[in-house]
Length: 49
Image (cartoon, rainbow, N blue to C red; front, side):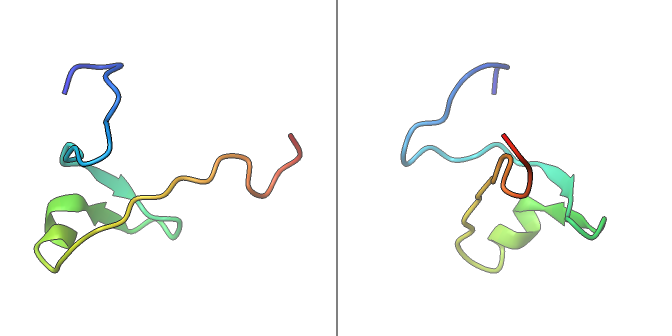
């Protein structure tokens, strides 16, 4: 996916690997092999904004 392109509802997310909040690697393709995946990001959830 080109940088800066937004996903629309129903688009497939690009495959990625990221560290979890505990530092363990999270692989999207591995999780998708188990079933549907919901991605959620919370910006500034625990800070003052």
